[in-house]
Image (cartoon, rainbow, N blue to C red; front, side):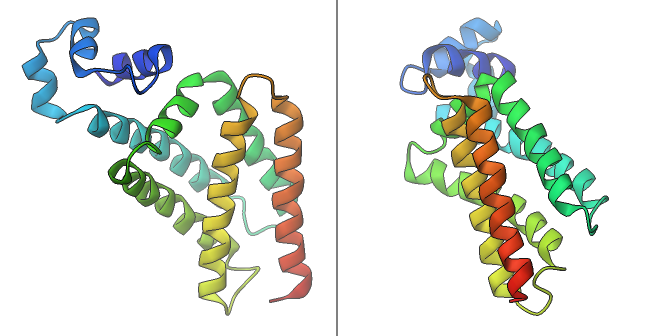
Amino acid sequence: MLATARDLLTEVGFESLTCEEIAVRAGVPIGTLYQYFANKYVIVCELDRQDTVGVREELAAFASEVPSLEWPNLLEKFLDHLATLWRDDPSRRAVWLAVQSTPATRATATLNERVLADQVARLLAPLTPSQVERRNMMAQVLVHTAYSLLSFSVQDGHDHDATVDELKRMLAGYLLLEESTGS
């Protein structure tokens, strides 16, 4: 059902997405869909959670290589991986936009971003060993900025590769500044 919902969301957009159409395309009775998902908002939140789990796993792999003096190269490698996910899977942007649609879905998306930010904060600990609040804020900014610009990068009329290059420069510059000031 979720794979069907993801495909349909990409095809018709969030406003036109209906539980009835998801059930029809998935070949299940509507009651079965409602047994698991109360409405389309719950469905897109679950899709966002699935996307978050995938990124969490990638962050965990990235964390195994950090701390390292080569962290700028590792950051670039990780951002390249995320950019490929966004470029090759149009549903990521569709899901990200869908969860921005209501206060309740935004709240859920914020919780999912927070999970990623918590992981990023742990990665940033060597840069800000004594400033937990600063590190947490930096992590939230990094995650939200990356997601926003990855969404921007796959919009029609935008140069995905150029946008990703700018994202890398921006995030690396932000972290290098933090490293050099020793804050």
